[in-house]
Length: 300
Picture (tube, rainbow, N blue to C red):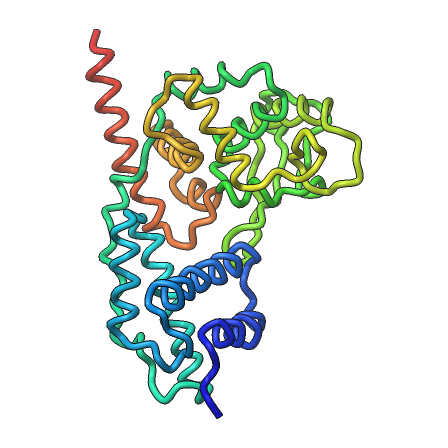
């Protein structure tokens, strides 16, 4: 009996291995997308048909191809991890006599700090000014800035995840709460300060009264996806004249400015959903850089 085709082997992996793991829907989607991209390369570009025809140099060529397309190092590392998981599974199942990805090396980690764009106080105030007359969009941007949640986490918010106080004010006890469905299916509860509560209350006043549990809806009354939120944020960043920033920059801005203002690092860690305090500690250096820059620019 001949070994399966490349496409059939990938389906075997997705149905037999990936489905049995407790992975978040977005993670499953990324795995499937990575392997479809690999299949196109092996079948259409190299002319291979069966999975047993794949050799280490074919996989090396795919990784080189990713580099030529200037994909971020983090994306290439994920794709390499997915490929190795696929072929390890096939070898363990006896579908392949050996694992051709065994010596496939992921790209070196890029310096993460180079990717961390932090908005200055002037910039994020300008961003909020650009969106102040749009209730839904303002609520999204305010929520991202005031909680530091990820883009994917914002997409996943449902009506039952949001709890607002009866009266929105600056008083210490007048806060809301948001249940966030984080990476790896790990939920956490983050505080909604008065600014986030005020923005959400304004959105609830105009949100369509439809039978849809997702919080943020499009004009067609359907849930907003990650791309829609990404494009929405990019639109207002442009209108505010802010270059080199993205949705994720709002997460970095939240963390950096809270550290700068004296919020305890462990509080920031919990809000961001980091498991390790070491991951959060990078924002100490970023806060120092922001302070240096502002004190230099605003010299008396």
